[in-house]
Image 1 (spheres, rainbow, N blue to C red):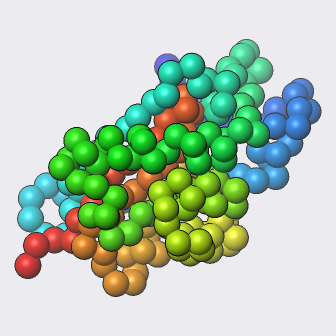
Image 2 (image 1 turned 120 degrees about the vertical axis):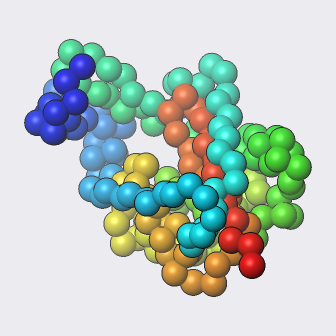
Length: 191
């Protein structure tokens, strides 16, 4: 596989499918913004926030909910209308299992930091996790300002959270293809 900048740029262009004028592809073109984000990580003490654990959960037989169809012409997006309902019905159990494996529960999390997949997805996350309505305020602001930039969006939200009062413990949450929830447990440095 060619990982040169030119090859990656050409491949990124394959996500725009002029040959597939499907509703899902048109929605994807309308919703997704352009964005890039990075985080500087270091081993050892110090730093603004500490990574405690990274976990994910993938539900079986869910490739038809979210993902990509790959063919010689490029990527074709898969977005099923059931994403918010699926998140509402299934997210709490997965999050509870991920936290339990760390000896934690939802009440141990000061702030959920979520990838804002869209307004309905944010509402589903708040409902599933029993969060107060509109509590994912930074997520809504990032979504309003930049749109859904895919994976970088979560770091845009985290940046806003870190600019305020640092939560004692937070859980970075993103939903993705497969259908998968990925999490990173974060803690304020001791002392």
